[in-house]
Image 1 (cartoon, rainbow, N blue to C red):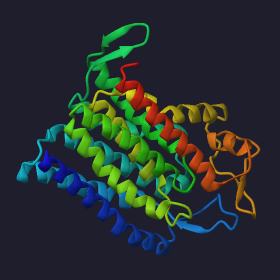
Image 2 (cartoon, rainbow, N blue to C red; image 1 turned 30 degrees about the horizontal axis):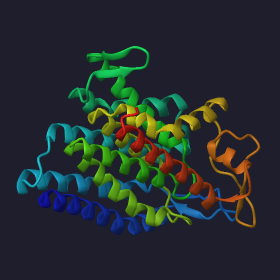
Image 3 (cartoon, rainbow, N blue to C red; image 1 turned 90 degrees about the horizontal axis):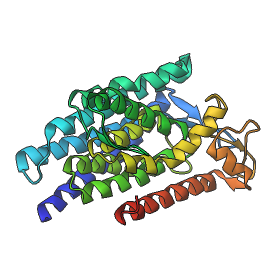
Image 4 (cartoon, one colour; image 1 turned 60 degrees about the vertical axis):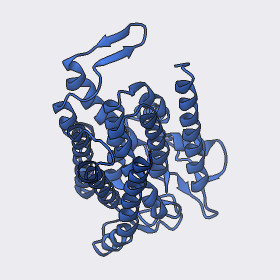
Length: 331
């Protein structure tokens, strides 16, 4: 047990430290290169560094490499490298797609269907190794073996759906990273309880990087996550759920994103999460609405930090409820 604990701590510290140390450098470089964006939830619209996903990608990658080193050379843990590297490759491909989107998508205009389709290609590594259990529990039908259709349909759909979902509920300081920490922590708990070592170390590497990134993304943000991070978070969750065969848990944890999907769909995916900032620091909802954040703003007078806090508290409640329901065998 002690070697495993030491391995977890080492991976966490390495991933956290890498992201924590490299993020200030990324912030400076983004400002020098004029790769910044306006903080739309602040009254004075300050310029904030973009593409924060780069620093998380570095920290996460070093964490993954460290896990492989510990498994292969120190032999403190046993990791199936085929599965582990397939998950890693999927997240890296998603991160690359996000970086391209950050650089030219919002400036030149990537069409909505292209934005939704590109993450499909990142699912290829998991499809190639036929990751996950093809037996799925279908409501009112029971257990159904999807066979090859699991790899050809469910895996790419899961990667694409989760990646774009995380990209929808975004736009407030600390929101994306906070949601990522809560959901990934919960998935890490379930992977530990089921003994899925590959998924557990995979999630620990990402969790540490996000926690470090939040130091710079929390209110008032010094750097934005960008599509590179939101897409990576969604892909991390999807890959973990697929490989760990815990699809039911993944769906439960993504409840807020399904709500956001309904809001966005009603507005043909043209609405925004940010509000109309006031001089006193509060936010007013945009007249057109179209987001869970807008709905919250309509319920009272809140600051950006409070809106973010309400959403994160709701997600924390969902995580706790999921653990209780699954652990007790109710679901």
